[in-house]
Length: 462
Image (spheres, rainbow, N blue to C red):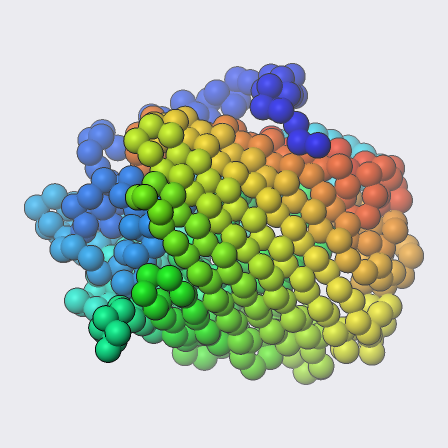
């Protein structure tokens, strides 16, 4: 079962160098904007508090979902209150530190933990966030990634939206998008792009996850269309292609796209959901999604491809009151893999593999200032010796002696917001299984709990 928050706190004080962690928060706090009223460009445009659109960033409220679906166009930017005039520009700064429980197990190398125990500027950059025309707007983030040491368009969601009244009196809201990641256009916080945990860490990551879970983020881009009928039924379809070449290259990582997951042709993505708001405090959504991608293994585009077919179910519940905010999110993803090229080149032992991912969690915030976030996660899938264990040779830290991707554990996070647009958080990730085993999972004596990690984050939006 999950660790209690008391346990997380005890581990923090016993395992983390407290002075360095405190210094991280002090540095971040000293960088806060001197004017407390300074808020991101969306809030300046709508004239509303950040709380109108978000419970706590990036979780959207019902109004926030409407604002997004209507093309980020509601309201009019007040140039007198904006440091950038009529341009809807906002800025981001994230400072973080990750400490993994063990970095000196047999066979482990410093290269296995390149950003561990380093205080980093994890992200720094600018947003274009707001209206372009009366019916078009955008959320585009161009920033520096401190883990990968590069500048790129990390997020792009550019959309046109309009609506009409049908003969039965119901509203039909529709739109067109251009985006650079499957699920980035989603208005809910139960799919991968906007689901908890809301920021990545420098921890050791499991050997395999569904490709729809951020594996294509900023590496693909493409157009889509969506509609919302009667504020109840939502549907979306899109088609993504790699951004390493062509007209879509400015929306991705450029040459960095060649390092992983180059898609052959277009990868179709679909999404449906039903939603309901009750009594102004409760809201609920239930949905399904899918992605079909042919990917060049090793990015050797002169060879064949492996096919990944993802489909899943998700749901979200929110309770929003003046002082108390509570939400639940869940997602189950099933992936079918046809490893045609990998099987032909003996990079995979099986022609067909499957993978399943389950994530269940919840958030609680008091007065939008103090919060607790938690999530249980579990990944299961086919065993494949060549794919996961290099033909039985074993790989320290990252390998799987059982050639199996099964991984499970908990993420627990404490959150404090000294200002509405400033978040300080402390996260503890614990593993009960990692890459197929709880003990000696890599064949070199490393245990799942050795990958437990503590993550400190200071995020400022202004």
